[in-house]
Image (cartoon, rainbow, N blue to C red; front, top):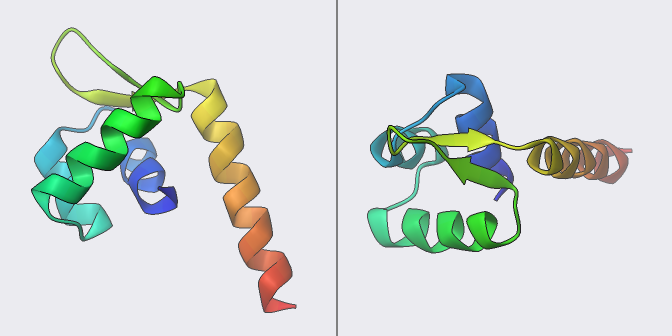
Length: 73
C-alpha cells in the first residue's frame, strides 16, 4: 500500500496503469489495493478517472516511512 501511495503522490494524478508500473504490481493486485484504499479514504478518484492521494493517505504514508526508519535502526 505504501508503494501505491508513493506512486499516486509522485504523479499527483495517476492512472491505474501508471500505478501498476511504479508499484510493480499486476492489474488484479493494483485494483484490489486501490479499492481497499478508496474504501478507507486513503485515495480518491477524480472525474477524469485518475487517483489522487488524500490527506488521510498522506498521513498513512508518513507513518509507513517512520516505521521503515525505525526498523532500520
